Length: 278
Image 1 (cartoon, one colour):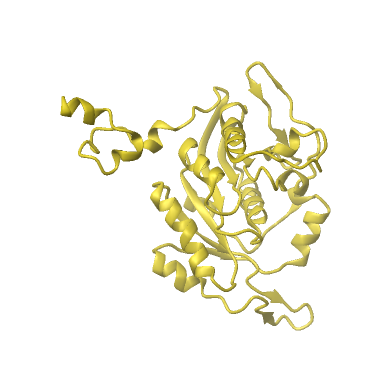
Image 2: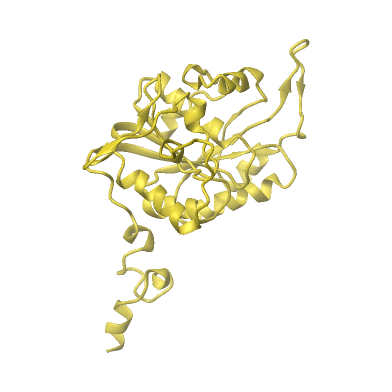
C-alpha cells in the first residue's frame, strides 16, 4: 500500500522522493505541444535578471545575425507587458489566423514575429493582465501559432525570474538561453539569478552578452566606460560559461530602431555566435 501511494507522488516532490528515477519530471510533464504546422529546430531564450539592459535589442540582433547567415528565423515576443519587437521591425499590422491556428507577421527581412501588440486594437493599449493570463498567452504563442519551418525561434522574455520565464522554461522545448546584462553595480548577483534559474530548470546557458559595455568617442575613438568597468569575463568564468559578445552604446543601432528598420541592422559586435547554438 505504501508503495502505491509513493508511485503517485506529485511532480513537485519527484526530484527528492524515493521514486525520482521512475517518476516523470515536472518539466517533461508540462511541455506544451507545438502547433502541427510548426517545425522549429532550435528554441533559444534571451533572458535578463533585470530590466533596462537591452534584451530586446540583443534578441533582434541575434535574429538578424541568423537571417544574414541564411537561416529561417522567428521571434516570439514573450515580454507581454512591454513588447517592442514589432515596432523595431516596423510591423504594425494585426495578426490573422484560421481554424488551424494563427499566422505570425513577417518582417521585410523574412523574420516571423508574434507579439501581443499584433493582437491589440491599438498598440498603445496597456496589457493589464494577471500573471497566469500572461503566462497562458505565451504558451498559446507556441501552441496556436503556425510558425512553419524555422531553424531558430528566439524568445524575447521579460526581465526577472517570474511567471513568464518559468512558463517558457516549463512549457517550451528551450534548447538554451543567452543572458543579457550590463556593466553596472550588483551585476554579478543579477546574472547569477538568471543563471541559477536556468540551471534549476535544466536549461543550458549558452553564454552572456554584455550590453552598454562602453561608448566610443566619435572624435578620437577612445572607449568610455559609461557604466563602470566591465567584470563580465570574471563573472562568466566563475559560472562556468562564456562571454558571447560585448555591445557598446551605438547611436547608429539606436537610430535604426527609432526608424523602425531593424530588418536592415548589422550588429558587428556579435559574430561567430549562431554556430554555437547548433
